[in-house]
Length: 320
Image (cartoon, rainbow, N blue to C red; front, side):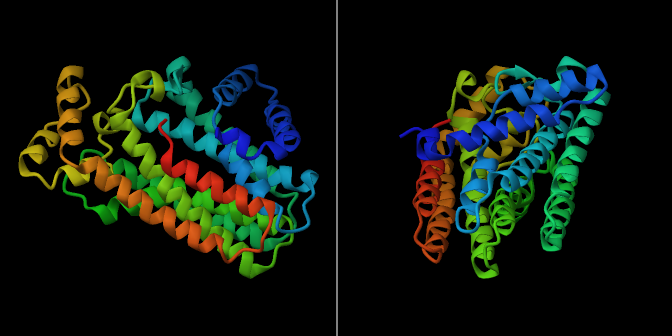
């Protein structure tokens, strides 16, 4: 089953979110609007808004309240991608030119800041002070994660703990908070919104590990960017870390630099795929997925619970 079919009962509300995203990005500056809309129209799974809405189903669900959180979380995600592309000097995302590629680094940074500020403005519609504390703490952690990612580039002596801490901040926290803030906006009791946070965290970890696997196993057409881009940019992910347990492969990976020829990076990708590192990375993803499904059992029975379970399983098995 395709991902969108799993939450098709939310289609009318998802359409409201899409319209709200477009209506929110309406600055007076034409250039800022063009750059922001370019990012929005590049698409994406909108998985964070979906988690917001599904979590809200465990409480007093009101789309006119839920949309503030759903749009805000997607905007924060969008802003982080625009900033990421500057940090990684990435020219493509989802097969389309990045903002920094289409314009320049300065426009990209200001676009990211603008989109980020819009998200914070939307969240003022949520009156619960806990929601703002949670979001503020998350933003601090995500920012620390961005800095750590810069420091970790081409640092080949990092370990699995370093990697897991980085992807927690890079991906898992925002998915976890999407679940938690969606629940808080709908008045879900604390015990359940904390469990939804834990569910989102485990799913987010699995999601990012699979993403990092696909960077080595998928085609450029499927990825929307060259295979092995993470490694070429100096981002050492789970498959590379597991592969470096082999001394020869470690010596080859340690030669990676940003101007490496495509055929050489292709040889290193082949070594990683032959090393058993991909299988170990899938096992790591599965361990987080199992934790997510276990936490889910503590939530009340609801159609949203089954949908969350289906999405989690899909995330753990997706091919691109």
